[in-house]
Amino acid sequence: MNAPLVVFFVLAVLAVAGALSLIFQKHPIHSALSLIVVMVALAGLYLLMGAEFVAAVQIIVYGGAIMVLFVFVIMLLNAGLEEHTNISKLAGFPGILLALALTGFIGATVARSAGLTQVTSGNGNISGALSATRELSTMIFKNFAYPFELTSFLILIAILGAIVLAHREN
Amino acid sequence: MVPTTYYVALSAVLFGLGVLAFVFKRNIISIFMSIELMLNAVNLAFVAFSQSSGKLDGQVFVLFVIIVAAAEAAVGLGIIILIARHRQSLNVERMDLLKL
Image (cartoon, rainbow over all chains, first blue to last red):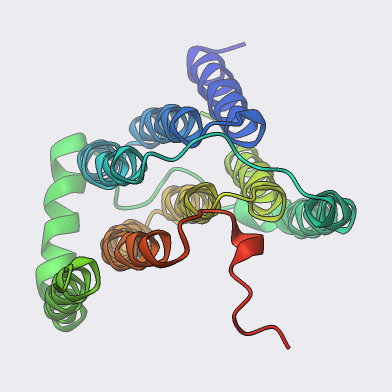
């Protein structure tokens, strides 16, 4: 077994364990910390795939900004243990079926297309670490310049929306 | 070299766990976090396909998904604060104003 495969399996087990912990923890703050584990493991996987910039953004924006926002809101609202009702247990049974069906469907599609995706594996224009990041920046600011500018408007509107929503009127 | 299929399989498993959390969780913040988990699973598939095809478009899409997720988290958590202030509860089953 070669080294990247070992790293992949370690990170994959970490990610799945974090996701399971997200489900089984009863306290929202524990769920949030489990989600941070998943995100850091995914950042490691991005590094393994040679996507350094995406890995850095994943840690800074997801692990840093978004999850801090979540933890902040959980503490602000003083969220306690989850309550359980009869309806939620009833909803759980079709929920398991739904999740299994979705995973099975995605897995079947992957298994069918596995032969197709293997063909061009690994020999593209992603060569070195520096060139991949440089290529990515060229793509964002040349090919995707218009969508990139639109996202700045989206962020602006989101900031305004968050301020308007969370503002306490007297 | 790790085969792309492994990454996509992991992505499918994480997405399934996200759906499971979405259905099982009763706390609105936990439900919101399971949406983030599903977005992360999709991002993993994007990067895996980007690596497999040798083109960087997938990684650009991931950056846009992260930006949209950040905007979504800001607005969504604002709405959650508003709901918690009005209803004094974070349980989604108590938010039944639209029920007849």
